[in-house]
Length: 607
Image 1: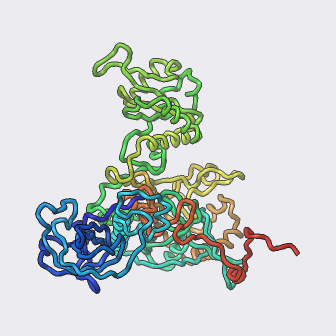
Image 2 (image 1 turned 60 degrees about the vertical axis):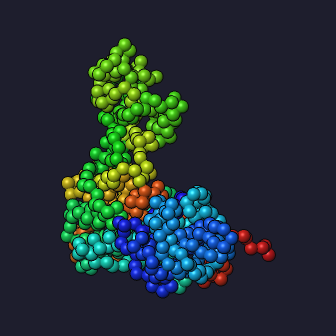
């Protein structure tokens, strides 16, 4: 996290700042040569002060639009981050002193009268972006970090994107409705934050990990198209793309197909991108979950670069190389990777093993001995090359379209594991930085309804248990549940999962079948979410929905690696808030009111 100084002035692509009121008549970053001769009043913070002789100083005054140079007499008491009101006359800078790197660099404020609105202690880190401070320090003084050009741009970008999302949903006929923040425990998979009830000791609310059940009840209530810029909370370990608190564009619609829902979301996200970048994104491509796994090794493929997985299993059907006697063999070609050092290659082998593979085979591609020129035969330099036949080598080079200087990486294992290991290596080696290249959106469809079996041999829900199975797969529920597809879909951009959605179960018989497969008995189902099942008995329309991660979308548009840099007050990766010191223990009185005891605290003295 670093703070870029806001010296560029007002961005002409953005809406003009609002008309100043109160103590100021203009904004710092909007002054131009056309304003020469005008008397203006500016308000902001001292960005820099430079002495010029005994009685004169140049003060760079900064607000969120940029900064402007003010010529001030007797400015010795002014320091960085003092809050000022400066009144003066706009004039052209003297010849030879213009600053072409500054939007206001042709003018300055002269004859200045200065009013100190608030003094300031020296800040604990430099705010102009020339010095990178530790992230923990920036989060400790987040209110100062928010003054930097980077955070000003990111959060104002976020506001524009959210506004565009809202306008798009309203334009598509959706009604904005709020759902409760104090909710009942639900079986959606993620760990929930529990809130003890003061009036009902021993009972708890939970903070919603999503408005999933509430919005389905809105469909039962006849609100055909609902949306919400929803705050959601999940007690899962924070990371670069995950926080305890996050925001999503949540939507649900009745009497719709999967394609309808995807069209709603595509339009809204395109509007958000246009608000952030000035143009709509290119076409949203579509692929099945199986295609994504087979081609990219992940269900959130980054389409900005190649290195696709190549199916090599048939090439080695009769191989004598024991390591390749496996259910599946997949390969990727790393252009120019033949130059990798041996230590880096050894590191890739260890990385593959840490991901669950039995091993990794690498092969450098080079011209065959004595050959040269276009079309010349190629050779493979690898510790295992001697175990492969000439026909296998030729077939491998042809299948991967390898060229001299390339590197081939192969994994032989179960199909899914081989794909996932190579998919992660593909990302490790080739993924560009977040802000580099175009935005490549992709819809991934036809996910499995179940994701493996638990210890008791029962299927585990891949998403939540309210996802409608594919109608063509209902007859395989009892015989082959892991082959049942879900009517679900994810939106992916540049390797980030932006959100998930599905057509929901609205038939009580199908819902009972899914819950039974998951090992949830009717009595337990009634106790946990009987209010939803009960609502379905009064006539539930077919419906489906989606949720777009606003934090992730804005981070991509801002070119940030972490969503912490597009959230005003985020938590650290340990879940702490260095600014407020949260989380903190409750006092004895609060614990008593809630009917709680601090079992982790000091034990009472023995009597």
